[in-house]
Length: 326
Image 1 (cartoon, rainbow, N blue to C red):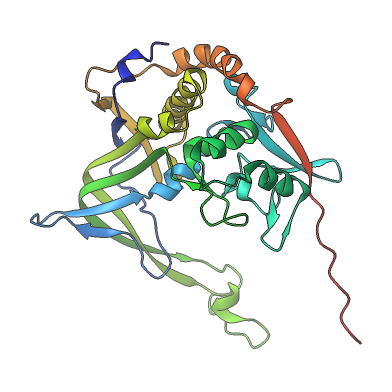
Image 2 (cartoon, helix red, strand yellow):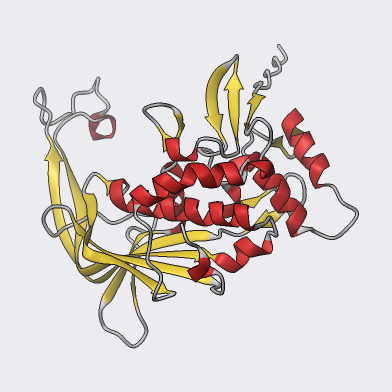
């Protein structure tokens, strides 16, 4: 792969025009107490919708490199650093799956009691200087290179050990119309559900009507940003930089290829010729096949930055609850 076209760029900006896989309707994200994130752009009359937030897209892109069927890292990325958590010598979770990566309580522990691995990381980060991004990046690359793309905050160790997401994305829908509909859950035994020994509709008895909203839109667009300046600021060398860029592009490609079934009634696909690089305009995005072919060599070239072995295994021991007083 040729990364020269990105050498003088601070951002790689990509967008993909999407459409429902079938029909014209899609189910928006619903937020507790808020509903769908509908808003207006100042000066424009059309309604916009935040179809998928940056947090959700980040979680979905992280999951692209974990093979749930095989319970292992995606084959092209075999050899990158991450932490596996076991309990009683059985797989429990890992830093690729945990919402806060290395900062998971199953990995580094809690602020009042770090795990043995947490104490190790804290020791490696200790310095008599102000926060050192380079040192922080070295430790993250060693144990979980994925954190260098998706960000982390090790507040259990200090309030300054944090980096923002280098890779981010979100999905917006333009000029939306709300499609109001509803249905009913039928009880084939007793439609009323009012018998005294039952819990009524709250417990699922009886015919229960429900209300639902979906949307239709003029256009749906997924936006992705890769902060190349941030990746260079880690000062980890060209091999690690190239690997991080390739992993980010692989995540975007896999997400757009197989990760767009966002909800039961929100199944999207990229329109024909709908994938566009906005910055730099002349950059040609490598295909998923090109990335799969290049990644093993890039992983090997950057392997000196990883722990040996690259997968660190930690044992999680749950705290035993103290018996209450009689």
